[in-house]
Length: 115
Length: 116
Image (cartoon, rainbow over all chains, first blue to last red; front, side):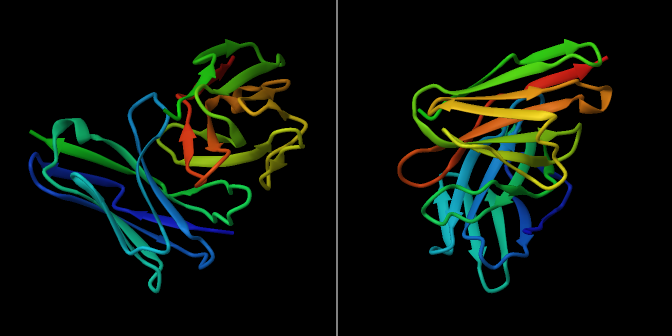
């Protein structure tokens, strides 16, 4: 089955700086890679996702890059703000176009934005 | 759009009792719903995949007789934890996948279960 590794487990950055979280996956058949933000006691919130037919996707301060050959993808947050503090999870799955597959999650990164 | 709700948000029960958790997609129809489990400071682990009108598919190591899943309609799935024990205490989160288009998963707010 799929295995997703995520680093770092904790990341502390100064407000206004950029944050980068990296993930690797093992199953070359995986083609869908979402990123979720989870605040304490709440469910995960989708912040951005990428499919294997593109190498990069951007949405305002958030961007995701995908390297299919190396089987790794990264989340980039620029101009970080205090409200960005949360736990971020990467995930991978196979979207065959028929039924959806369950997500395999990384272990999470606790992002701390220092004022 | 794409709002998923769960009920209850938290529940405390005695060991040996059964607990039912509801997951609803409020503004869309979901072909597939998923149930995940999350222990404190850990990641989400997929428990089962639920398709409307058919039996759920359980992940390896998840007891189907203990975690009963019913997907009665395109907007409702339920998870029943039968004969709950303290080790079942966890954060249970569902997600729903849109019936049309890309299969993005939207998560509910989670249900915290504490078994005494």
